[in-house]
Structure formats: structure tokens, C-alpha cells
Amino acid sequence: MERLIRPALRAILDAIDGIDDATRGKTLDDYAANWLLRHGVQRGIEVISEAARRIPAELQATQPQIPWTQIAGIGNVLRHEYHRVSDTVIWNVVHEHLPSLRVAVSAIDASLVED
Picture (tube, rainbow, N blue to C red):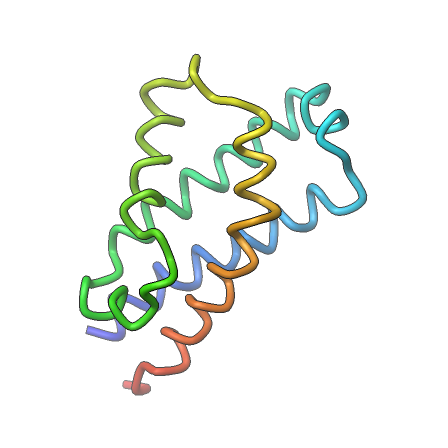
């Protein structure tokens, strides 16, 4: 099982790192004005959303502070209701939620037994 889950965990951590790198030193106004930055961050969140779906419920339950259902849902909005995407909401996800997600996913990864 761990062999199948680890790539999803790594994808989440890689996406968070990429988003952090891309947004470091930027403001919400910088983000809103930069099409490439917005779409790159949104794509990173889509990857996070899809990878989070691959984490079994019993492992998600070890990190109850994380809104796993909302993480899955934001990917659907980004893919299918892109016209509703708010720059402010995405910016808040980046700064308010991704740091705690990084900690939770790292903890799940550390709890897995090596194959």
C-alpha cells in the first residue's frame, strides 16, 4: 500500500514547494496581475487535489485538522467551474492552508513503513 501512496504524498509536497517558490515575495495584486503565475498556482492546487484523493481515508483520519473533502472539491472547481475561481480565495489557500497541509502530509509520509 505504501508504495502506491508515497507518489501521491510526494506530488502534494512537490506542488506545495513549487507554489511556495512561485509566490514567495509576491502580493495578492502581483498574483492577480500575472496570468502565468495564477494558472501555475491553480495547476499546482489541482495536482494537490487529485493526489489527496489517492490517500486512503484511514490515513486522512490521522490528520483530522485537514479539510480533505474541501481539498478534493477545490480541484473540481478549478477544472470545471474555472469562471468562478476567486484570486483572493486561491491566495488564501496558498497562505492559510498549504503550510498546515505540508505538515500533515509530511507526518503521513513519515508514518509509512518502508517497503
